Amino acid sequence: MAGVTQRAIPYPETDTMNKFDPRIGRSLADLDTPTLLLDRAASDRNLAKMAAFFRDRHAKLRPHFKNHKCVTLAKRQLAAGAVGMTCAKLGEAEVLVEHGFEDVLIANQVVGAPKVARLARLATQAKVCVAIDHWDQAAAISQAATAAGAIVHLLIEVDIGMGRCGVQPGAPVMELVRRLDDLSGVRFAGLQAFEGHLVHVLDRAERTERATAAMQLALDTREMLETAGIPVGCVSGCSSATYNCTGVMEGVDEIQAGTYATMDRQYHRLVPEFEIALSVLVSVISRPGSGSAVLDLGVKGAGGEFGVPAIRDFPNVEIPFFLSEEHTVVRNAPDWDIGQMLHLIPSHACTTCNLYREMIVHENGFVVDVWPIEASGRLA
Image 1 (cartoon, rainbow, N blue to C red):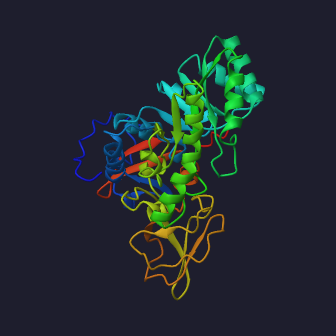
Image 2 (image 1 turned 180 degrees about the horizontal axis):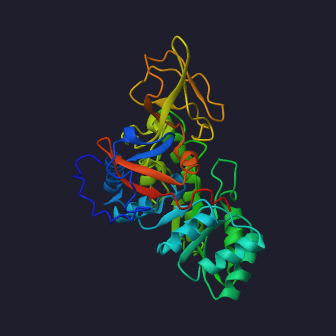
Image 3 (image 1 turned 45 degrees about the vertical axis):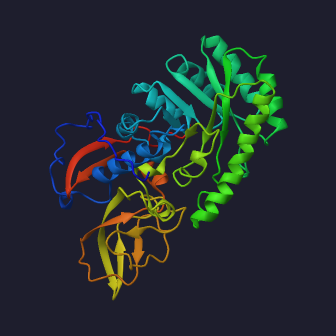
């Protein structure tokens, strides 16, 4: 935010996976590959930048844990000013609550007797909010929460154009809200709306125009409910790519930005004011021909659904495709030696972090910490 001085953030002391991990203090050149890396200083600057933007605004940050799934990094986001965390899955929320988090939103539908029972138990330990878009979901949660003596807060998801989950704006939301009055163990907390079908529009002006028009559908629905005397405690949504357009709209209360903490190749195209802090340390394992090189990482080590990765410090190197399980083929490679280490920048941080069990945290070329990725693989 222009004119705002970013205050130093009193980040909590981190608990390393092993305080005596022999990698701490070593050069990155001493590490094995592939290894997931996080540049702590760059990530801290990203946290500070996003926190500064919302510090004096109405909307507050509820970062998306699915970006990194790392409890230590989530704690740093809270220390920077976040009001709670957003999760994609119930299992992620369980990890956070196990580590002392007291306010979590599951921005997804929780369905099935085993999961609903877990949700109700979790709500006895922390404030838990969950997205719904159907009466059957609410009724099942009500039954389980009542039996557990818990209260589960419900956000009705509004489909503002993504065509995934959600109730259509307007009257269908009103109808579902009214039916919630008959249920025990649950409370209507507000609305969730995600303009995910527009966050990857590269032109920023076009992205702003289309995303704000989409979010307005949710805000019009909020106005309809409040005019009818139904309080709407919260409208939650938005992303790292729309934080400064939909995130500043009157009536939006929470921002579910995630990728800003780590960044990746795709989101850096969208919001270049945030730094790429995440990379995967890789090695050159083959030089099969002039200008050609092969690296020791493929789709089992980096998310590729947003396109091919990039090589840090070598912007002109071409990766023609990214489909192999364990290899990345590079064209027009410089005169790299066999064994040379490089920083690969994934196109998507969220699916990359989910593939690892730890991230090696570094500054100035040296390992300063090792953070577990506690929610890696939590898909249920």
